[in-house]
Amino acid sequence: MKTVISADPPVNQAPPEVDPARDLPRGFYDFLLPLHRAFSPRQQELAARRRGVLEAAHQGRLPDYLPASEATTGSWKVSLPGWCQDQRNQMTGPADDAELVVKMLNSGAPGVMLDLEDSVANAWPNITQGIRNIIAALRGELTYQDKKRDREVGIKESKTVILTRPRGLHLEQAGVIKGERMAAALFDVAMVAYQVDPSRLKHPLSIYIAKSESADEALWWRDLFQAVSVARGWPSDYIKCMALVESHPLAYQMEEFAYHLREHMMGLNLGRWDYMASLIDFTLHDPAWVLPDRNTIPHDVAFFQNLREVMPEVCHKRGMLAIGGMTALYPSREDAELNARALKVLEQDKKNEANSLMDGAWTGHPDQNEIAVNQFPYPNQVQARRKDADIHKDL
Image (cartoon, rainbow, N blue to C red; front, side, top):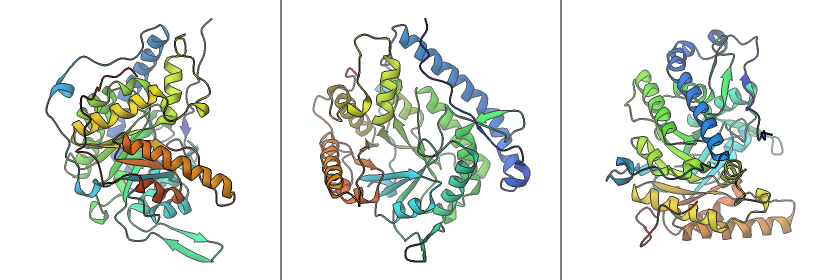
């Protein structure tokens, strides 16, 4: 009997009363339609390819490194912008929560990622509210009402880099183009790009790519960034990006993925929570891989530590930042014992990442920022390389 391991993700359906021409920004529908025609069919092809790779893994053909290519043997490097040199902590949270967005941007974190992906319900009200908050945050105009102090709180001036994480290529958006589904990632990127004015931004529009599973998917993102930029009259390399490595297949194709996006890429992030789930998914039928609940897998387990050491080597070889994963245990202002334990775990985890030559951390709470930043001795460690490093370790 065939084991069913997961259901297709739910499709975000715009309510039937939504009229895109009326309810979305003026002119956006005409901007979106040609992008949809070009990129949604490609997204569907990539989704089908993903299913084939997973099925092959269940038949014993597990992911592995690709043959040598220009991506792995050439001398290319990315050009890391000056405004993104210090990302010792990137704080992330749901974009549809205005209060949290403002608090993150006022936390002093070098980077903040505003999320439309897995910290936000994939529902029309949440996604559209998240996009409104992102636009307001990029303009420096987002506020929330502090009910305890009865005052309005806005975003303070800072050098914090703001990144937007759209939904991944596994998700689709319905109800915008009548009778058709489009790539949810396309809708999110297009909505944000259409509404921003580069003259009002501190730095170019920056996207965090989630849930990728192959280097070929980087070509979709590259072409989307360039098509959007051309449509807006921007330089083709205007949009910058970072990408999460949170699937087992992509761990073997990091260098190729970055190569395809080299005109846009600033760094990679090791998303360990989803990586653990992906690893379980791909090795489900392999008796050599029997893993416990991912909550119980320590952050320094050997197979994951291999990946934690490979990624900075790949990134630094190509001039990119390497960002560590999320520490899942959050501090608590109500429970002193839990708070102390959470911050101690955070310190140990981020120190391990710094010793693994990561350039920064990922956190999800303003109280984690100072401890996270302090574990990294320099704005970045891009020049640091391991002697005799092996970038083809068994993952």
